Image (cartoon, rainbow, N blue to C red; front, top):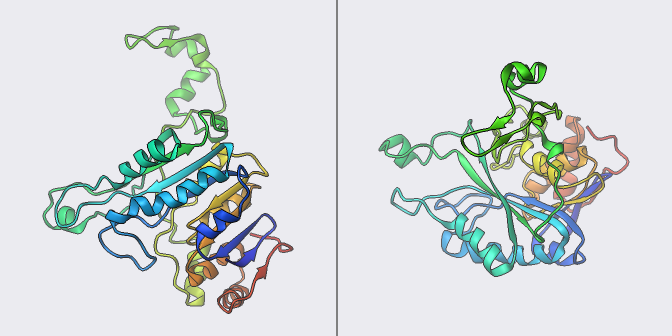
Length: 317
């Protein structure tokens, strides 16, 4: 393991994240949130396992994570869907991951989430664009695993804005509803008209992955550095970091990529540790912590050359 850089609140390491996980004390991590390379048919430049070996490969990480999580800690895993080779039939690998983690490793499924990315291009090309026999794949499964049956969580930290209709109801609740039992059996009490500062979000997360104008990509372009091709949007880890941790808690991303998780954790006053196997991707992720083009290129080169960059005294932007 090689420390690439550190900030006031976190560190990014280059190397195998199994080694990183081994270095943690048991019961020391509040949240692991990550998006590993998916089990796709097409080999990607950032490295991904085939569907046959993927589940056991990922389970080696999960076993360690379970030991390193605090009793009220969580493990959030973003997985994209995939098709079987050569036929328009879906792979079940992401559901097999879920079953293995719960039934064999001992995690609890606290809740299943689904990330809907409306900006995702139609795919797979063969079945959607050419033959037009399938809808485009625009939803990822996001499994929220917990070590115990009552992990730390506070939905008040991730409330969403009320709809216009709800705002009208809150303004004059007597005009829009009366407390009563609905045909479904739900009891609509007087408390339904109370303003709680926002609505409880659903487990369908509507988050476009369209950060083409982000600081990270601008600096990649300006410095001639290739950005990571599979970034998740900052609002995805942001939701779970706010929901499942408190300021000062430790957040870990074992497949750091462009270190979106670290940037978000830093901004939310959480301690963080990320790990990335590819040196160039790890080095480029430092762009998330600077706005200066010439400085960015110098910092990137230092990391590629094997140096450790200390940003702990910097005022990060």
